[in-house]
Length: 263
Length: 221
Image (tube, rainbow over all chains, first blue to last red; front, side, top):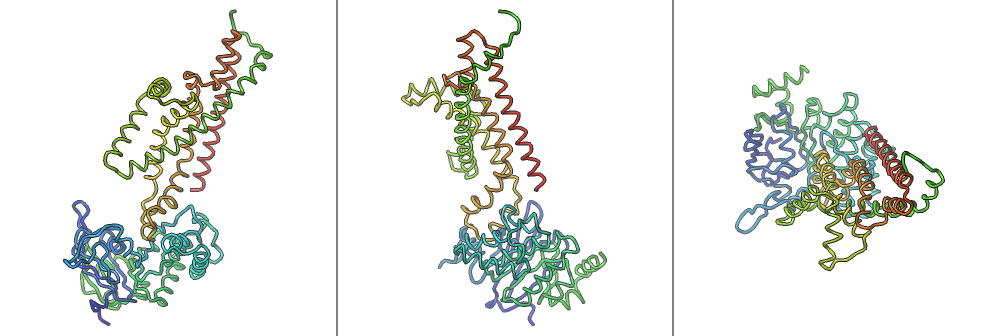
């Protein structure tokens, strides 16, 4: 397969994305395209910009420079006859509907039960009826193996169960692109497997494109079509997992993988 | 009459009249709290929304209320507003005064509750495409208010004690009845002691209830 998909076919197109916090350049002119159905794993040391790039895709971080195009629509711009015109949060809210994200810290709403968490975007973002939302939330939670925990609050669930609720919740809007931001990093080791299992099944079964930031190299090798190695705000190496993870060319990738595997 | 002398029979005889005062005190506290909680939330939103001229005006108003004695504010409402043609009953004036005064404290409490919420709550709500109105009413406020419930409770307890000031603008609340009994009978010790004991009992029990509310929340969190 091609390592960079055809631009016309790209579901996500990021051009020249830069972001600076104070003195630190977190993202340095990143170009990134993701094709429909493509699963892209992002690896790299902490502070390399891999989480920031995910947050940029869904518009939680607004880049200083560059354009983001999701399923044909610009996230922070409107297309006019004279070219691109900057657009605000209201415009971004519509465009980002095509994107879902699962956070490292779950970010469930603690005052709501599992099913209420999943129902929330169905009722209030999609405007579905209560009955229809309930039915769909029920299906989604069943899909992630939580059929018996619908009425529990996050505090009554294990970390792995909470993260699975969060996955179900982000699936509710049927996003075309799913972002996974180190979704197992906050979990106790024995709970990592159940969450990876759910993500793996999704990756194999669904039509969604995925961007997956992870430190689980075996998992990345298993599900990714392409691996990106981030370092200091740039993509220093990319290619199929067999190449990047097994036979890295870049010395920084090699050094990083050695450090991760020796953990 | 000299020395301390306490007559139980007399003390009991004052209870029915004092009870009338208790009713007024409770009404003033309840209505004043409702005003303080609603206005405090309004001030909080105006401050968050950063509206030109309005936000600085509200900020100044809040500082002013916090920086002047409640008694002066009550006098102003009671003696000055009627000269501008605004007349309401003494009790209503007192309730408005208490509500305004404590709204300036409630707004700080709401603000703290909102700011203390983890950023992840906002991020999840935005990422899920919830309309901003729903983010406030469904996600942020329910959690923020729950977190500061004990502090809002403290406002009610403070206000309950400060209702005694309403006696200075002719409201016949608990202290005013106690004083009236004293002036009528020339015996102050029994009515004033009972009045004080009532304030203390309610404040103490409320403070204990609020503390247990706080610890219950900590256990849950």
